[in-house]
Image 1 (tube, rainbow, N blue to C red):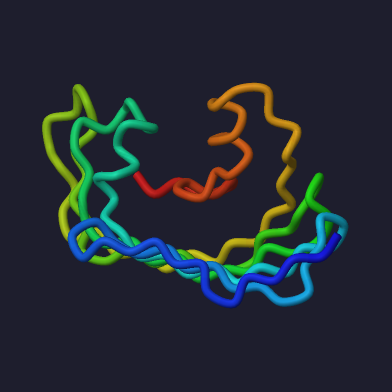
Image 2: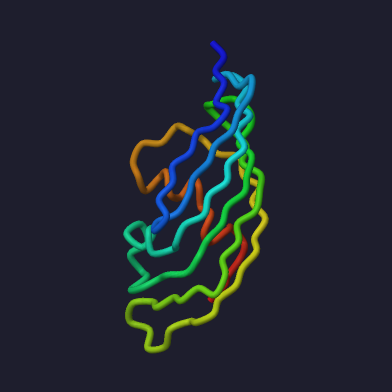
Length: 130
């Protein structure tokens, strides 16, 4: 069937915002506009190599195509981030990154690690930021 989300909004003035908009989407043909703003410290639990990470992150993207293999196209922006890697003596400060995102995703996920690898938004393939 079809579904329509005019305004899906999760908001917390201290933790960030997630907004998803869609019109005329179906499971066979997604068309979701996604905007998110939060702090990188919320993802630290998913990346065990980071001793500490913080700073604002913003995502603007469109998720389209069939539910089983959607395409994610958009941009991720990180501003004035702080990154401390475990067992590395010096932190990285004032990191800035604007990264285009263009990925074919799969929803055939067998565990959480597969999901994070599939999304791979924070260190895009073929890039080495450290």
